[in-house]
View 1 (cartoon, rainbow, N blue to C red):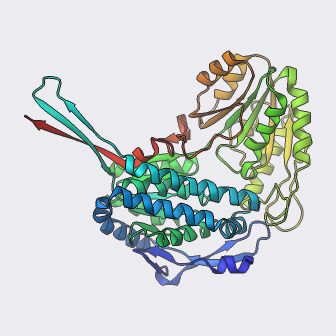
View 2: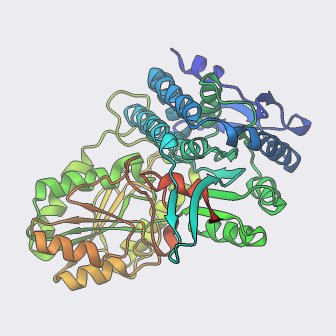
Amino acid sequence: MSETSVVEGVHKELFVGGKWVPATGGRTFAVEDPATGEVLCEVADATPQDGLAALDAAVAAQADWARTAPRERSEILRRAYELLLARTDELGLLMTLEMGKPLAEAKGEIAYAAEFFRWFSEEAVRIDGGYQVAPNGAGRFLVTKQPVGPTLLITPWNFPMAMGGRKIGPAIAAGCTMVIKPAEQTPLSMLALAAILTEAGLPAGVLNVVTTTDPGGVMEPLIRDGRARKLSFTGSTAVGRKLLEQCADKVLRTSMELGGNAPFLVFDDADLDAAVDGAMQAKMRNIGEACTAANRFYVQRGVADEFARRLTERMSALPMGRGTEPGVVVGPLIDSDAVRKVSELVQDATDRGARVLTGGATVDGPGNFYQATVLTGVPRDARMATEEIFGPVAPITVFDTEDEAVAAANDTEYGLVSYVFTNDLKRALRVSENLEAGMIGLNQGIVSNPAAPFGGVKQSGLGREGGAVGIDEFLEIKYVAVAL
C-alpha cells in the first residue's frame, strides 16, 4: 500500500444522487500535504449550482428514506462500521497525508469514527414514543418521533473522518437525508467515507457530498432555500454565529459545536503523574489542533514548579516530523496561517513576561511545523488566555485558591470542556459543578466518547452529539390527540 495508490483510490468528484459527477465547468482545487507543501491531487470544486443539485437529490430521497425500516438503517451503519475497521490502514494513511496528524493517531480516529456508526446502528432501532391518558381521562396522547428531514452538515479539517461519522451516523439512524460539505483542506477522507457508505448499502441520494473552496457561496443558498430543515456545524464560533443568522431566515434547527478555550486545573493534592499524563493527552492530541485541547493550564502554587518541570521534560522529548514517519508525535499544523497564529500568540505571551521552558519557535524547511512548547508565568491578559491556540503550546499560570482557579477558568466566552485534577472528592464535585462547561474531564485528559453527549455551553455551541441524546437532534416530536 503506497501513498500514491491510497490517494489514487479515492474518487475526486462530487457525490450527488448516488453518482460521482464533476463540478460545473470542471472546476477543481488542489489538496496539499501539510508536511511537505506538495500537491496530493485535485478534487472537484463545487459551485452554488452543484450545491443546489445535491439538495435536490437529498429532498427527492427523503420520503422513501424516512419510510425505511429502522432495522435496515441499523444494518447499513453496522456494515459501514465493519468496513471502516477493515480499511483502517489505508484510511489512516489517507488522513495523515491530507491533514498531517501522525499515522498512529489517524488510525485511532478511524476507529473512533467507526464507533459512531456502531453506536447509532444500535440507537436506530430504539427510537421511542409514548402513550398517555389525558389528565381529565377523556382522551389519549400519542407521542411519536419522526425524521427532521433533509439536513445540511458541515465538518472541520481537524477530525475529517470522526466529525463526519458523528453527524452522518445519527442522521442515517433517524432517517434523514444529507448534504455534507467537508473542509477544503481535508476532503479526501469524506469522499472515501461516502464510497464506503455506498458499499454498505446506503441508497442513492441519502448522502450527498460537495467539496468546494467557496463554502459560503455554496452553503448559504441551501440554508436559505427552505427545503433543508436542519444544519449541523462543527467549526469556529465566528462562522457559527454567521450560520445561525442565516438559519434564522427559515427557522432551521441547528446543532453547533463551536470553539473552545479549555482550562486545565491542577490542585496541590493531585496525583502529578496522572496530571502530567492527562496534560499530554489534553494538549497534544491532534497536535493541539482540537476544540477540546487544553488551552490554559492553571496550576496551584505548591506543585506548579514540579508540574512545569515534568511537563517540559515530556514535551521536549516528543519526536517531530511527517506523520508517516515511525514514532512521530508532533506532525505539521494544517497550513501556514495556523503556524503564523501560534507564533503570534507565543510572541504576545513572551512580550507580556511569559518564559519559554521548551520550544517556542517554528522549524526551518518545508512543511507547517511548530515546536512543542511550554510557557510559564503566562499573564491572564495574554491573547492565548482568550483565543484558541490550536497548536502544541501549553501555557502555565499559577493560582493560590480554589475560588481563584474556578473564576479564571470561567473567565471566557467559551464553555466546551474543562479538565480538573484533584484527589479530594469534595473538591472534585464542587469544582465540576461550578465550572461553566458542557463536559468535564475529571482526572483524565480525554472526554470524547461516542456513547457520551458531546457539546458545550455559552459560545461553544448548541445541542449535543453522541450519546443517547445524539439521535434526538435529528428527530422531531409529534403529538397526536385522540378523543375517546
